[in-house]
Length: 273
Image (cartoon, rainbow, N blue to C red; front, side, top):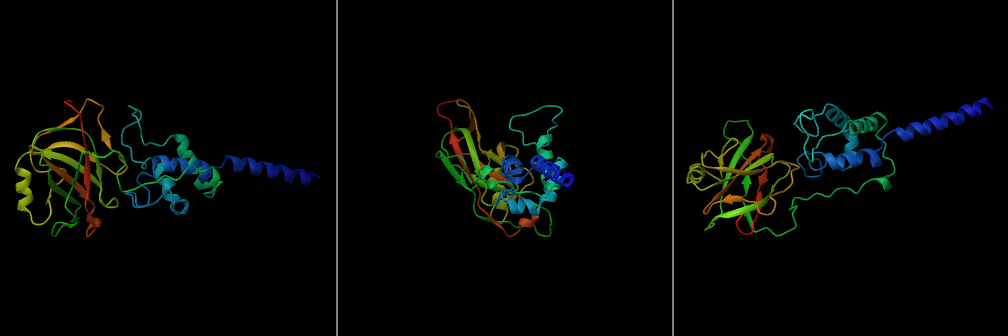
């Protein structure tokens, strides 16, 4: 009789503990899909597909370490100083959920309760037709001779605009999501960027974090996981006539030999913002 009661209590306690243990379907997948998958998906800059349960389990130890240490997802601003909209930080509860999942055997759970798996594509996020599309020449990533440093390369693209335009927004689309570390997008009307391009053989010319021209103006940037930028109606960035667009792209050294042909979709403001 006593053994039967103990067995029942043991079963109840086990069931209660299992109810408190996080699983993939209802606990971890929603966190990774929302906070990590924009980079960690097939073909993404994170190189590991954490929309996939088997991959997440294979790297569960790394997920545990980097989230517990606050290294991932990367979000440098100090939360004790100021908060921002759309922060990609994990709450303490989310970190504890991941810890529970890893510490208790990375349970799958009921997949019928899992959120829809996010879909990512290398094509445009914005569905409206851009006013202009500008593409850089196809480029094979090539380190500087005798160097083992990362590659920072400028690509000059003429707009051929006969009059000034106002950009309401843009979407930079990397041609190789696995190897484009980040991109800075500049505009310039000077001959300096053309001279720099002509002085260097092949496609584009080197430049760490800039174009080498004092008159270049930064329009914006792309980093993995970022979304297109659009000004509110009535606002816009001035783009003078005869401007050049310059993509300053960072490729890791290990990207040598890979091919890229990134592009930008421009959306113009109506009227005079």
